[in-house]
Image 1 (cartoon, helix red, strand yellow):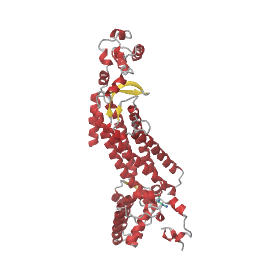
Image 2 (cartoon, protein in one colour):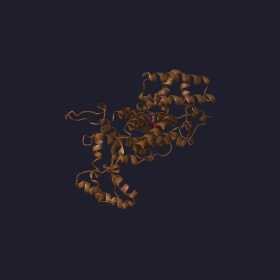
Image 3 (spheres, rainbow, N blue to C red):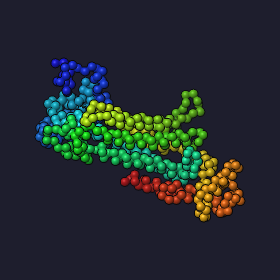
Length: 462
Ligand code: ARG
C-alpha cells in the first residue's frame, strides 16, 4: 500500500497527493477555530446514536471521555494540528480514535463531514451573532450617555454638507443609535435562519440509520431542522445574510467615522477625540490624526468584499456539497473579527468624544440656519408657504450682502420682506427657539431628545 493509508478516505487511491495539493485543499489552519463547536456537535450526535442503539452506551462513554480530553488539549494549546488530516473534523476524530480506539471510529456513523461542517458553522455563527449583539448594545449605551450630556447642545444640522437647520448634538447621535438598533434587529432575524440543524443530512441524501434529528436539534439548541438534506449540506445563504447585515453595520460605522474625521478637522473643530485613538505624523509635528475612525471607514471595504465573495462563491454551485464551500469560512471569520474589533473600539472611543459647543455655535451663525423657522412663522400668520419661502429668500440675500445673520437685521429691515413680521420674530430666529419649536416625536427639541434617550434606555433593559 502507498503512504495514503493515513487518510480517512485513502483506500480508493493509488498515489499520495503532492504537498502543494495537500496545502491547497486543507482547511485545518483556519477551521480549527470551530473546534469547540465541532466537539459539541459530535457529542450530541454520539449521544443520539447511543439513545437509538446505533452505537453502545459504552462507546458513547468512551467518545465522551475522549472528546473531553481533546477539548482540554485544544484549550491548553497542547493539541497538535496536522495538515495531513486536512480539516478540524478529521484532526479531532483522529486524536479521539488514538485516545479511545474503535469507539472513536464509530462516531462518524450516520454522518458526513458535509452535514458536520454545516452544523459547526451554524453553531459558530450563532455564538458570534450573540457576541455582536452584546457589543452593539454596548455601543448604543455609550452613545446614549454622550447624547444625554449633549441633549441641549446646539450644532448645525447639514444637508449637502451645508448648514441647514439647528439640531442638538444629542439628536445627531441618536440617529446612529437608531441605525445600530436596526442592525441588532437584522442580526436577530438572521439568527433564526442560522439556528437550524443540518446534521442528519449526512453526505447529501440522508442516512440509512434510524437517527433522531429532533433530539440532536434540542441538544444543540437549534430552533428548527433543515428539512431537505440536499439544501442542508449545500446552501450557505445564512452566512451571506450575516455578511449582508455585517456590511450594513460597517456602512453605519463608516458614516459615523466620516463625521468624526470631518468634525475633528481643524477647519471644522466641532470635536476632539481622546489622544489614545489618534496618532501623530512622523514628519509634521502639528498633526493629530483620527486613525481609528479612518481605519474603520477603510475596513468597511473588506467586509463588503467578503459579502461579494460569498455571493460569488455560491452562485454557480450545483447541488449538493462542493469543495468550493470550504471557502466560506475565511470571509466569514474575517467579517466577524472586523466587526468585533470595530464595535469594541467604538464603544471605548465614544465616551472620549470632547464636544466644542462654541465651534458649533459659530458655525450655526454662518448658514442662516433659522431661515426655515422664519418661513414657518410667516405661514402661521397666513402667508402661503411658497410665498413665505420667497420672502425669506430675499431676506437671506439682504443679510448675505451685509455679511450678517437674519437675526442681526433690524426689525424695520425685516418688515420690508413681509409686513406680517412682528418683534416676536427674534425668538423664532434664535437657535434655542428653533430647537424648542420642533417638539414632536422624532424632533430635535431638547425635551424630545431626552424623552427619546429615556425610551431607548428602557428598551436596552428589556
Ligand atoms: N473542510 C471541509 C469544508 O470546510 C469539510 C467538508 C468536506 N467534505 C468533503 N466532502 N470533502 O467544507
